[in-house]
Amino acid sequence: MTSGQATGAGGKPTTVFVSYSRADQKRALPVIELLERAGFAVWWDGLIGGGERFSRTTATALDTAKAVVVLWSQTSTDSHWVHDEATSGRDRGVLVPLSLDGTEPPLGFRQFQFIDVSKGRLRAEADRIVRAVAALHDAPPVPQPAKPSGVDRRMVLAGGTGLVLAGLGGAWWSGLIGGARAEANSVAVLPFTNMSGDPEQAYFSDGLAAEVRAELARNSLLQVAAQASSNQFRDRTDDARTMSRKLGVTYLLDGNVRKSADSVRIAAELIDGRTGFSQWSQSFERPLTNVFAVQDEIAEAVASALTARVADPGKRSSAETGGTKDVAAYDAFLRGKDLFDQAANEATDRAALARFEEAIALDPKYGAAHAARALALAVIANQYVPVEQRPAMFKDATTTARHGTELAPKLAQAFSALGFVLHNGLLDWKAARAPYDRSFELGAGDADVLTRYALFCARTGRFNEATSAMDRAIVLDRLNPRTYRQQGQVAFAARRYADAIPPLDRALELNPKMGTANSVKGSCLLFLNRLDEARIAFEREPSLVVGLPGQAVVAIRQNRTADAERLFAQLVSEFGDIGLYQQAQVLAQWNKPAEALATLERARAQSDAGLIFIRNDPFLDPLRQAPEFLRLLKTLGYA
Image 1 (cartoon, rainbow, N blue to C red):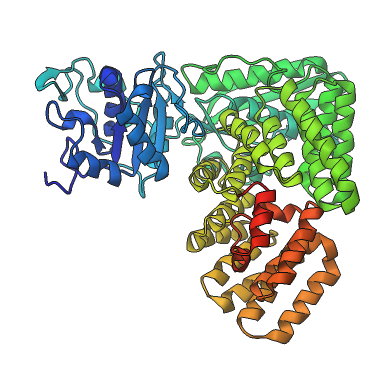
Image 2: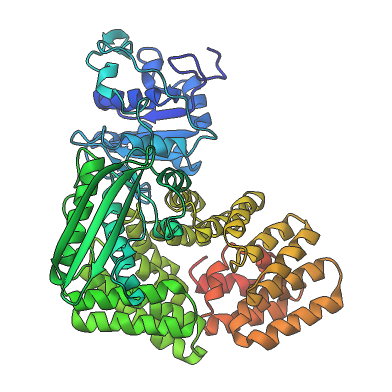
């Protein structure tokens, strides 16, 4: 071993640094064992000489680690060594926090979701830990072969004396890492087939599948594919093994629904995607009033089939997670969600809003309906209503979103909706942070919650958190073009322009007509000085409010003044005050700072949603030293 290289027990250069308090060494060793069995080369303080806490090699191991795994406990939270090592991991964006005894991380580290391995939960969380560490590596590790059961070879150096650790042989981990896929507990819920004979009832079968999916996603022992990706297989043209491979899951939950006036019949089947064979199937026929119990029965049966332990977070009440016991309210909510998910136009969004309000009228304590109503109000206010009507709508959206979190304190979507309204509607990013962070804590299995959180983090400078959340969302929603577009937006916000282009290309491959993706790609190419390619991307953008300003800036860069003037005039004439922020972007790049700053002030006066980009927007870089711009940033809470 040289002073410039840190190597693990197997002689390989270490890529994982495990930080813990010496008092916790006994509990730390199974974590180290887990990581080594997964194929990682691990540095831990048992590899250094007796009595030596920190050495040059230790510093090298910490500085070069691709993942810093910190084991928090009542003891380690008071350790300066652990704090320093955790700070290094946090600041480099490679922190993987675990809690050995359920202790929360100390201040400065609570923005990161930790994995609780207390009370014997390490084995249940093993896949999740390995995935978190693997996500920080360029390639997956090579699992080590299982060892015979018996005494482990690890020699623990403590105070200069050798202590042999017994009882951690390979049998304890048999089949956990080497013998089972990391996605062994992964499942996709396919859209349930509507067997009612009435196409208008499709919303109900889709909604029922979505509710089962949401219930499964709350179980931290499962990895559940997101709705948008699962819905790609509505027509079942592929076989089970093909669908499983494309979705990146091991199991598929399929089903059909027959709904009549007063009863519902649901047939559900769990299929092993590796073989195509059924693992479990059951039919449920109940009065319509018992549909909620059936949802829970299906979710619990599937979870039982996939995990040894089902309700590890504790069984939550329907109210805590935003549910209702009123069938009519539930029906109205599903109809509204079906309309809102179409994202077609103002008419469908307003129709969705009316359905959510109907659900609330039938059950005023329906937390999920309040959250959905808040999102619908915010979207309508941002996209459709005159400027003077926006403040009242955003105030209403904020009130109903807060009420949703009070009614459903365990519903991630409620906190996500509140964060969205506060940030995108009221431009109050400081107020939005707490609900967004809470949504992330509750909704680590929900791709929509993760992507919304990631975009917020990216736009407020928390790029490591944004990237981590997006990586998780991609795992859950790998066939959704919107998720790849958002991954590209996160990279663009961090000014990683070259990294942003591949996910944007993937989004456009999945949906060539997708809005905004070409604009973000064009922006990346523009700031990479690939102007001809940028021009093509901007010209392909179907949303002119973001396509025209990009075309205009390319024309400015290429000294095509007449084209720039024409494109800017078209932007102003077609979008007027709706495009104030985009006008300011062009003016800033045109070296017209006074006009750009005046336009941004008009945008601020009208609560232009484009201002959520102002903190990181490279189009506005020519203005960043201007006193007026600095005052605007301060007004918006960014300085």
